[in-house]
Length: 91
Ligand SMILES: [Zn+2]
Image (cartoon, rainbow, N blue to C red):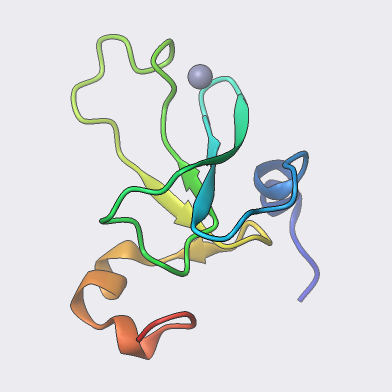
């Protein structure tokens, strides 16, 4: 399936991903940071982590985090935690 506009908005504009790193995307302001440190609880299939930047998360307690692959497609983090082997990139 070709990427949707939303997927392109998420996945576009990053530098090539380095091994062991993730890209950060803020859904609040669209800010993008390439090749940031990966957190140990990030699904290993995740290439892009959607988390509110410090500016956009002011006043938000525990902002929700979403994970995407390099094409901007959703990664189901709840399913990942339960059964990583059932997902692409899983052990
Ligand atoms: Zn932001």
